[in-house]
Image (cartoon, rainbow, N blue to C red; front, side, top):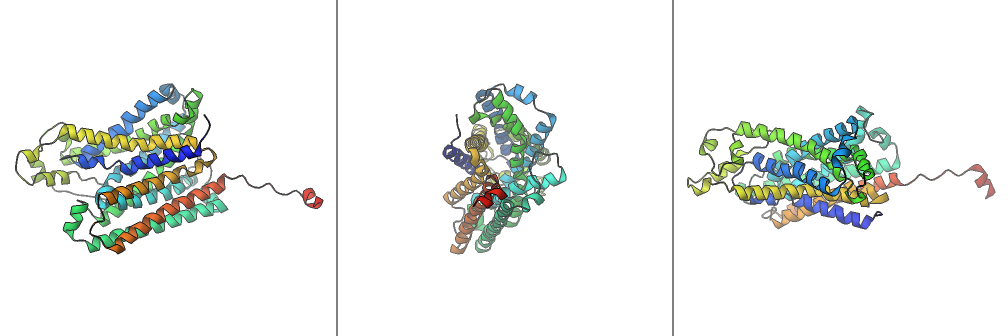
Length: 408
């Protein structure tokens, strides 16, 4: 099967739709703490779906992974774990900023640093599988175009952040809570910055895992599915980070019982004091809001419903990577555009959901104009970054030899 860039674009946009929509099912979860539903969804995102689909759609998954060098597995896993920090705080970005602003800012950083992070690490550790350092990139015309795209991206982030600040100043506390229950601009920007930078490591993890994809093709896997085995290693790294943090929160907040209990414990609400940091994931707000009335019904946890919606959200999140690897295999000489297409499509679809859920309801025309301009600038930046990568992918013109010049 040959490459088909048009089909590749469709796959990337399907991946963007999955990523931009994954947080929607979590809105159906009731009376669970953040760390509980995030970890349940994560089991599907990082463990169940990757292993299940790679086992079904590729050949000799275990054998392909066994034949990899320690270096390949380590760097793929390590940057997957670093990406895990981004995924860990991605949910907090949605909670504090909403879907349109939260994803716009976080993914703006992700698009920028997904380009810059690998060559920066290359300067620190020359052995990592990246072609050039940041200094070498900056010395070329394609590199300068790419860096200019990063600059545009940072402008877009600033405009989107200004939109959020404008919204916060215009709306009363009651209006903010009606639209986004835990809207907090300052905390949200801090979390989005951290999340976006660390999420960019996913691009690097995919690069480090390329030998796994090649080995899978050698084992007889169709090209379309050859990227799935490396996702097993990348997402295992992401699972490690998220699992450790969620368990820490379960122990600290006393929320571990929620996985199995059908009733909230009132004492959890009354006896704790919350301490939050930029990478904290406070889980008690759900309990606090749910236990305001003392009726028995208000303390009932709908376990089947919560597991279903968390599993749906986690599966949806995995499918962004599923479609990403499929799209990457179909782009051929246009594969440079994969990361930027993915980022742009996520921003667009998440903004669509933000408008559907009326996250900007009650804000002024100025705030609406700013968020629209910010999102448009972020999309433009991904295009410029992609163009810079395209220029790099073009072969350099051959120098004109002296005898040819003389003949003319």
